[in-house]
Image (tube, rainbow, N blue to C red; front, side, top):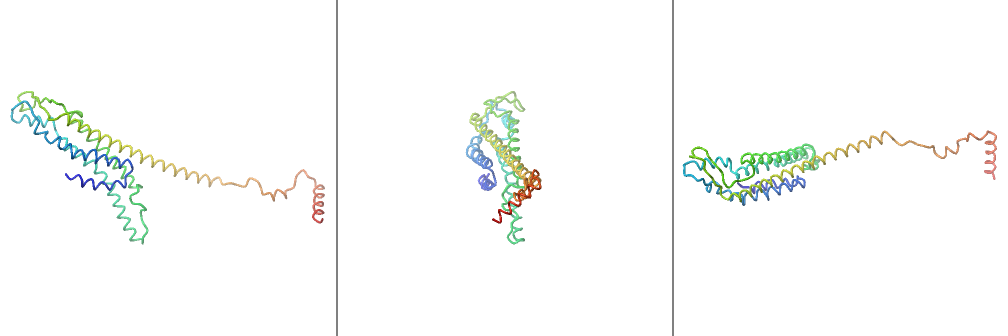
Length: 268
């Protein structure tokens, strides 16, 4: 399988991803795809050829191998990588759809744009991105559960007992290089768990950022409404009005005398 083509296709998702998304994509291709292509395929290349049972009964070894390895680890991991990386294509498809709508809008409205930035996670694209994270974490979790159920844990025993027909009795079967295969299996399991953690952290980051933005907008709206409902009124009249106001403690004769004194002072 040509994994480089898939890597080139998904590398464009980086510019639409958060920091957690970039770390997730790097982990997928460095710690999972690269290890899968370079090392894991070679380690599991001899699993059928070097699987040995201490019997010469025709068909017994094949039946025991099928019982111990219901599905090859390599094929299971290949399916897992395909399912896990495909949800990122949803985001790219949504961005391309926005860009197409924006081009048509520009042609019809003489230069004005429908989207200021088609790749900005707002509206439907935000939900598409969040849904892709849920799918990625869900697929990884499902494949880890399948691997656990098929092999009864994340372990490869050195010796396996088999008593299926046409084996004449209980036979002992041996796996080639079980320790090395167990190490690679644990590495792939831990890598998948870390990728699930990165998806969960990115979901928390996106939802938390969205909630903070909504609360900020609501607080701003409440502040504007409060300012409109409680406009400042004049607490005291101007000083000019205070000067012309009559003191209630002054009698009419005293007021008239004060006016005459002011008039004489003005004449002088």
